Length: 330
Image (cartoon, rainbow, N blue to C red; front, side, top):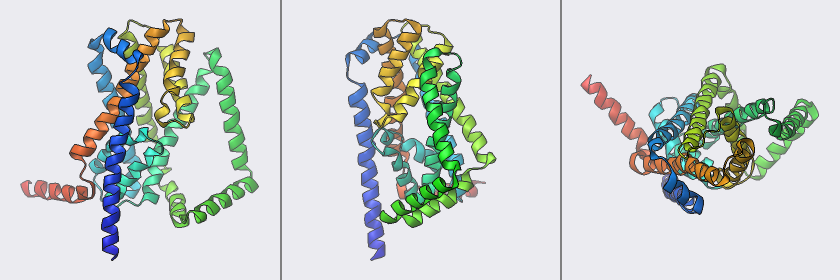
């Protein structure tokens, strides 16, 4: 009976992921393949920049996948890194949907990694991104006056949260509240497993390379934005481009909209227009190209990996077979 239930849940997970991946691609297509800005961008863009932009976009996704392999290492004993790598890339399209990031936990569950454990690397992946964004935003306030007010507000929020956490009474109250919520959701064991798993990832050996890979990935995105602007004859200077990526992208992540869609684009165009006094229509076209290459393209790339190279529960068997073949050849 338990075996039948297990098979049933595996089928639900499998087809649910199929639908989620397709949903993510469709969402990206509806958003990024329509609109006057995209059409204008596609007509006037210098396509000599396109291959490099797409290569950078692909490298960004691969660097994030490599980081996920590092973060998953404490929980993936015996699981080949390639499987974890593919799982991250395969789940990219779903991240565009509300709560879609949890799909990666579903992919890892297919290869026998409990959700309570895989959720730790997933949470750290997001947290590392936010730390980099926050540090860069605070640094931006030193050079760009318009960034000072948002940076001060952000610093105030961080300070308030830190103070609340440092007060023992508040920290204990938050812990009890989290336990109460977990109990109500019948997930107390999973919550405790999550808490026990955090120290396994929070080590210099893992966090150091993870932060380095994140910085490299973000440098790639900044270069992709710069090339998207240059493809429309806009040379705004690297400092402006850096700020034009960091601040709007962080704002888009803070707003509860999948992928920051709409918020990121609008704030990016507004920021660049105010900082560089450039033509708004050209900026809108350049940002459309940038988001098309770094959001829509990555969603399609992830969907391709999922449907063509991800074997789900058969991944472990496939990797075991490959190892046997290699050993026999040796």
